[in-house]
Amino acid sequence: MPASKEMTTIGLERLIEPASLDDFREGDAWRYPQLGRGPLARFPELLAIPELFDLSRLAAVYNDPIPVWMPERWMKNAAHRGLYGTFFAPESALRLHRLGATLFFPNVERFIPQVRPLLARLERDLGVVDVYKKSVFNVFASAPGAGAVAHFDPEINFAVQLKGKKRWWISDNTHIQFAPSAYSVLDTEATMGPALRAAWGTAPRPKKLPGKPRVLDVEEGSALYFPAGCWHKTKTLEESIHVVLAIWPKSWIGVLADRLRASFPQRVSCTSSQAERLVEQVTERITALRASDLVEGRRPRQARAGRRSEAR
Ligand SMILES: [Fe+2]
Image (cartoon, rainbow, N blue to C red):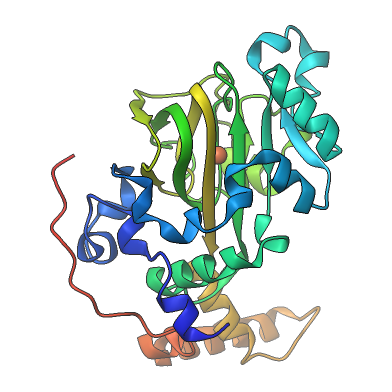
């Protein structure tokens, strides 16, 4: 990826308004949703990709089945709810969209390479040392009345509204600090992975959006940031298309574990005296670690002054 292309595209600063880069990186603005309003013209990089604004064109280049989210009014029982997220061929999905379903085009970067510099720039601006999973560019198209049921995702989310209007309800996640995967109120024990079940522990699984949500109405040109793990649901107010750039950095413990793992021989079993020695070695090596060892190899962060954030 040529650095120049990456650096002239949309950066973090334009996606976290009204927070500033300084407040986001060094303060606590990253903990809270940030909604910036303005004309779509401030994102010329998105306006230059016609497929993002025309579902037929998008479906024509998107060479994969598309997950379809049925509106709540179609989900009268458990069998119906089981169909939420079913994959359809693009032509059938477009037909369901005309009837009121939401189309979710995941990983659009696979088919529209122009969006890749946007993801690379965001990783760089966020100072991501390493990603846990590849960053993705997703497109959502929904008819009035449709929306996403209450859920949370493990990625850091940046949403830009390209067309229409949408209402978001966003709540803190007070149950799980670091979500190992996504969870929706439609999930059951059987549909959750072991890491997510372990993260939940014995806490009750909410069946609706928990807490006191913030209600945010977004319109064409709005950019909404919300942190990883944040609960959210949406309702489309006007025929809508929005994009989400999702970044899932490796956790600090993951980065630390990688550095340590590289310095230990593989051992599949050991005696208690060997284990004791291993613990001593881990302690020695953690004590000897310098902060620069952890961030070695990371992309250089751009030193840029940002505006002070408004009180929210
Ligand atoms: Fe989501």
